Image (cartoon, rainbow, N blue to C red; front, side):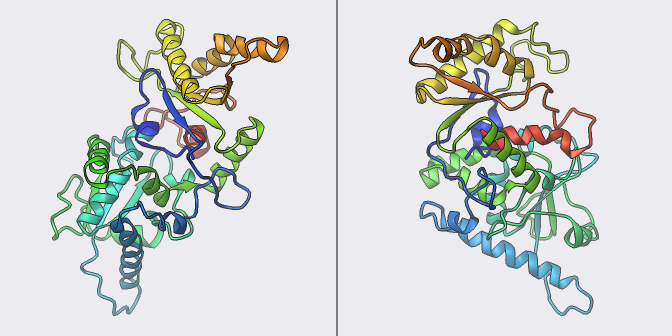
Length: 348
C-alpha cells in the first residue's frame, strides 16, 4: 500500500514523487480497504531480519514489565528497562510529517541495537494517534500516553540528543534525525541486501479508525482499486530553486511547477501505461492544474468523449478545494485539519 517509504515521505522530490501499488498487499480492519496487512503476517516474512521479529516481542515484554513495576505494591524490578522516545513536545521544533516519520525505521534499528523500548509522543499539532496507530495484532506499541507517560515524566530528564548507548540514561529522546533515513537505506543495501523499510513501517503504523474511514471513502469515490493505480506527489513549495515556502504562489512559479508535474506524470505513466494515477501535492493549485488544465486532462477528455488517443492516463485526486495544512507551520491544533495530509500519505 501507499504507506510512507523513504521516497514517499522523505524526499518529496522536485519532479514529483512516484509510487506504484501493484506490488503491495492491502488488508486490515474489517471495512477498510486501505489498511495494513496484519502484523503477524508481516512478522512471518522470511525476508525480514530476525532481529525485527525478536524486537517486536521483546518490546512488548519490556513495556509490560516497566508498567507492572509502577503498580502499587509491585515486586517487579524493571530498573534495566530503558527507552528511546521520538518526540515532538510543545517546545520542540519538529518539522513536518516527513521530518518526523522518515527516520522511524532507523529509530527502531537503533532502539534494538541499544536495547531500548521505542516510543513516540507528539504534542503538536495533535497526538500522532489521531492519524496513525500501532497495528492491533502483534504490532509494536509505541504510544506514550496514560500510565506509561505519567511514569516516564517522573524519570526526570529525557536527555534530548543524548547518547543512546549510555546505559545509565533511562530515557533518551530525539526530535528528528535528518541523517536517519540515509543511514537506514545504507543498512538495507549493505547489510540486508533488500528493502525492508515498508515492512518495518507497517509494524509501527496503521491508519487510525477515522483516517481509515476517510481513505476508504476516497478510494471508493475515485474508483481506486488496490494494486491497480499509481501515485504522484508533488512537493512544489519545498525551499529550493528560488522557492520560498512562506511567500509561494502557484502563478509565480507556474512555469517550473508545470514542468515538474508533467515530468512526474510521464514517469508514472511510463511505469504503468494506461493506469489511473492518484495526484497529491502541498499546493492545491498544482493538483487543479493537472486535473483541469494539463494536456493529460485534455487527452482523457478526448478519449472518453470523442474516442481519441487510445493510450490515455486518468488523473484523480481527493477534494482539493482546500490546501493541506503544513504540520510544522500551521497554527491549527485541531487534528481534523491535518487529516488530508495523512490521507494522501496512506493512498500514495
